[in-house]
Image 1 (cartoon, rainbow, N blue to C red):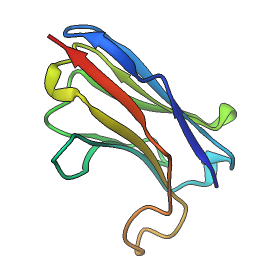
Image 2 (image 1 turned 180 degrees about the horizontal axis):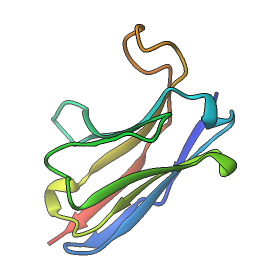
Image 3 (image 1 turned 60 degrees about the horizontal axis):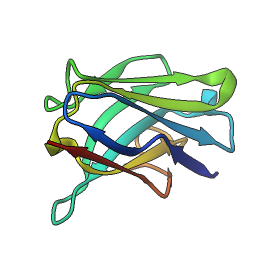
Image 4 (image 1 turned 45 degrees about the vertical axis):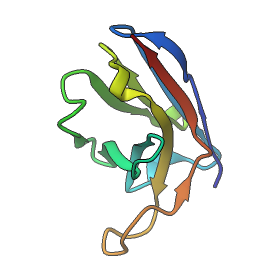
Length: 119
């Protein structure tokens, strides 16, 4: 399964971006899909997840500003990012889990797309 992120870039603080993640396999059968980010010198962190039933999770740091969604017909995962802050600057990765919930971790990862928020 290939995951290809797009939509990153340079934006001023307070601006918006929408990240997309196109999957080579239908995402309808994915149990969970998520967005992670990693800033220089920091560990990778979960930003948001969406389960097959539509349940979503957003990290406290992005709650109310970011929204994860999926379009099964287009096999695409999205992350709408509003009110961006400099601390949101990071490489953003898409991930997909097709294995059972009992199996820890994600199965597939994208290569990442860079988001840079300037002051």
